[in-house]
View 1 (cartoon, helix red, strand yellow):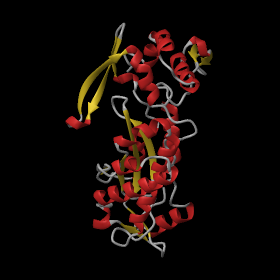
View 2 (cartoon, one colour):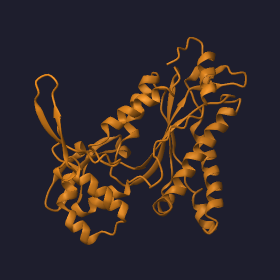
View 3 (tube, helix red, strand yellow):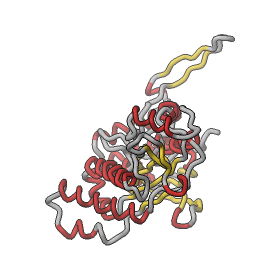
View 4 (cartoon, rainbow, N blue to C red):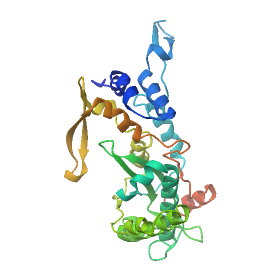
Length: 325
């Protein structure tokens, strides 16, 4: 079903005003320009011909930009196929690590540093808990995906992690986490360890920041959320693919465009996930959309294959009843 409104329509309608009022860098303007011209005559086109009847159809070229809401379908499918080889035939957990609001300023001005530390400190935390005999006593794996925005296109950096419900011991034997894989790790403990390690690393990379800045990071709990285990490997891939090539806002969420405003739907997770509508000015849409851009040089969904190929084979061999995918 074709959406009633498109992001490209908004960008084109308020393009001149945005040029006059907004101060964006060249990379942001190039991205906006690609999205607004996607599948139009400005990018040229090509002719498709049916092998059976000879029917000709002219199609306009896609921009293939990572932030375009019309160019994610094929990339999503390709990513799904590539990730199937990384999964084990075991249950998985979905764990989310969220950075506190106190780091928002740092996210805006030093995004590469903040987000790279997020990946590394989360993995370091998961490694520690997996290696602890109280929780697992083995080596586990993780695939992680960075999201920097919330439903209202506001800054909300968090890391989605897919973690198997077990790992391999030193003897290359598969071992489930507690309760036969129905419980991963205690989230409150994960939160405290993650916060301590992240702040410790941040102190080393930002020696010029005042002491009160780092102290403020300990005044609030860092949210770590773990969902119940998935049904199996295929469900993991399907679920994860919703996040890998997701952009700030899809065309289907847009509900209205007027001369001065833009309206869209969003889920209010503070109100039990109820769907609501938000209206912002047309020119405010451009910087909000840009705020959710991927930092240049940073990939938001690296497949962290922390179980090496040899260990992955051992995992499959050591898991009773497992069938290699």
